[in-house]
Length: 249
Image 1 (cartoon, helix red, strand yellow):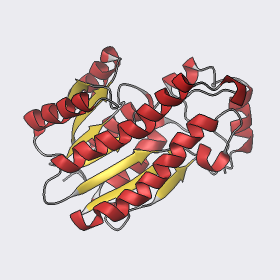
Image 2 (spheres, one colour):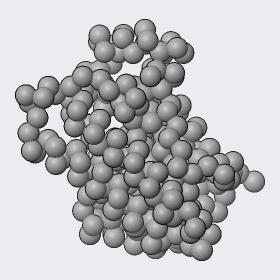
Image 3 (cartoon, one colour):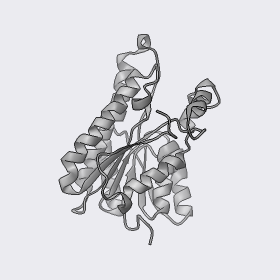
Image 4 (cartoon, one colour):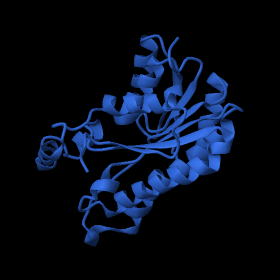
């Protein structure tokens, strides 16, 4: 028997990168997986195809996490396909680095709407769709809250909020058998990191130089931690913030 047999997992922002890696890992462990995406239907369909080709169960559902109507539809489609939810991974997120002189209201609201409001709305939907056995909520924060890199004031603020929300909701939802934890990755090689020019440049080299384990992360490194938190192996953990950064602080 696999660790997540008969479980249903919703992963937001799962068309690529860390989210896609988590979706594939949880599916391989037996979960029926809902691959949420905002704009990349092609990427989400590819993740679903890979899961089903390997004998797993998955569907793709479009939805902007900061839009409640989209969240309601996400869970309606989940219920229709698989039934009640057992696991939510709040992975959807955006980032933009810039000096304080470059910050504007549009960038602020874009990052907070997705990274904070979206997380709260997706969590509310999951709580309403868990059964009496509770469930596991896994937030994807960021090691930036420990590293506090320059030019990241807005993004770091959103992930600081994720840390606080994780700990508040772990207390608020514990009596309902719902565990809430956060994984805070360091630099991870993803499509987004490549598109942002972070891979292969000075930022990448500095991350490798300062990492005690001598490399940046891969999506599978985070996915394995997510599998642990989603499973009964982590039944006594809630309110924890696990920094998965290869030792960078």
